[in-house]
Length: 222
Image 1 (spheres, rainbow, N blue to C red):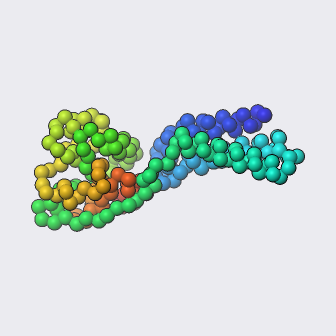
Image 2 (cartoon, rainbow, N blue to C red; image 1 turned 180 degrees about the vertical axis):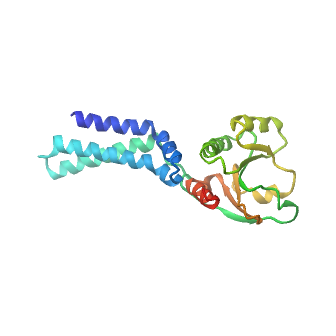
């Protein structure tokens, strides 16, 4: 009974510290995709450990049907709770982008690095900014910027405060470029590599996931 209780406590602890495990993986400079998967792998292992201990203590002499039934219930019950508390959202692992080439007066709109185009008061933009701050702490050599749409100085200040002034925040320059860039709402993300070309990689929010971060870090040689 003690071993069952310990394995249940282990599962509960892994669920509670799910995000901390992701941060631990990122701080070890593991890939974003693996760091995102890591807590789910550990939680699945803990569920299997519960099944093993229940089987050994209570089901060793039970019928095959009962053993399978109990194992399935524990597997789906434990895994279901883990995913319910820490769900996987659309876009968490995605990397759906398009390529853009700018020329003329728009060629120098974006600097080398990752730029988020944000709206004033956009909750999804602030959520993405939190992610950018985490990356900035681990990889300070990756240039990151926020360009706020609309001439709202208060919005710029709110983004600067939220970024702790670690990410450069400014207004999106007035031009006709915006309508041709934005795809699928805000935030939009733009990556420009350091080779000086006009080629940009553009994601909408649901298309930018852990695989996108891995792509950027690989491009930057980090």
